[in-house]
Length: 105
Length: 410
Image 1 (tube, chains in turn purple, red):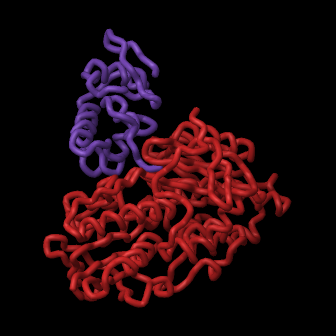
Image 2 (tube, rainbow over the protein chains, first blue to last red; image 1 turned 180 degrees about the vertical axis):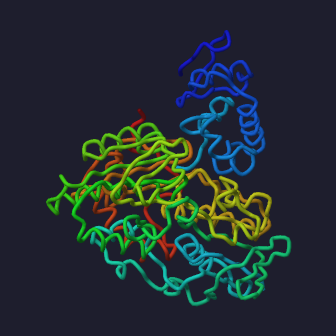
Image 3 (cartoon, rainbow over the protein chains, first blue to last red; image 1 turned 120 degrees about the vertical axis):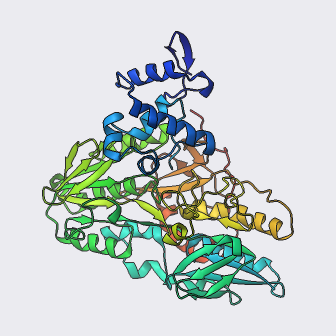
């Protein structure tokens, strides 16, 4: 298992590069993960999405899809892709400290 | 007299009807199946129609031929389910009261969900192979196509039979090679996934297969719209991929009756307990096959394994005991790789597809995640197994629960 130095401590990552333990997450870690994803700054709109992701995960045990984000987070699809280029659902889940969305296999 | 109501007469619904007809006392239970159409298509066969291997009439049979005599079969669209009244309303207004409800309404493609996908070019330069009409149209088109850039586009996950896009490309490679025009055809996969498939080991192996067959992959492509005039796919982030021919796997969604019943998620799939297959929050309602929101594959093999579990749980439930059988997410899929060969993957919620051997008494072993002729025969033989054993709910020599026997852990 890979570990990474973020926000001043070594944090364990899973096989997909997401946090291995949700408990390691805090806002500082989120910013570090965002930088790693090429997002230099988290704006209030980023936080709207991140918080929505976390709330859905807490309730349902999986991160929402992009379709659901568009429908319920109040941020439209186009903007989501500007905020989290190349895959808002996957990237915002990572920054939110959640495992890679299960989607379907 | 109690009433077992099954919505959907496809793979899952038909297996359940057969199993329950054999187990429930006729004096206590009547069983009804409702489906919108009379025809049962062998859906794994759609893949072969564009390449002329199967003709459509070879892969369709009357649904009612597969129901035992005691089953009442109603052909009707479903308006909605009213769980609080334990009632299902049919499109014509008829109300069916149930004691136990099984939702097996499947999934279908929805090209209209993507801007610019379904316009006057649909069926001309843009095709699907997930419907009888779509697969036949594409077969007609290929007969006279002179070559160009063929894009296989997966719009969004989940899709039915997640290996179908890869199989389509493998078979296209073989088909155009045999026609002596492979050098005139550029084959590309455009997918929202980060690679050829979802799980790391199989994604790598299948990705290598695609490369070997000269198929290029554009991963992480989330389709925003299709521009038919310019013949290009445009992602939400404005990256573009051009095409001459687009073979689309459009958004897959559950039946519209699920939305009307307010029982589904954003894609009309029903939130389902991943182990017991009970609908979340509804004690007398069970869900099976493509209709569920489970993180298992939407595939016939999954419906078959789920049926074994659901059958046990329904028997427990009607005797007033809690459901105890647990579905492990088991899927088992043959992957046609062209030129008379195939691969096999066997996996569940926890274990990704691994290489090795798959033991099957009397027939196997099949090779896992490796190409072999026997896997191809397995796939072709499966059509017979499907109509004659599987739909009838008969025992197959393969367990609902995944086994690690023969698998090599990486």
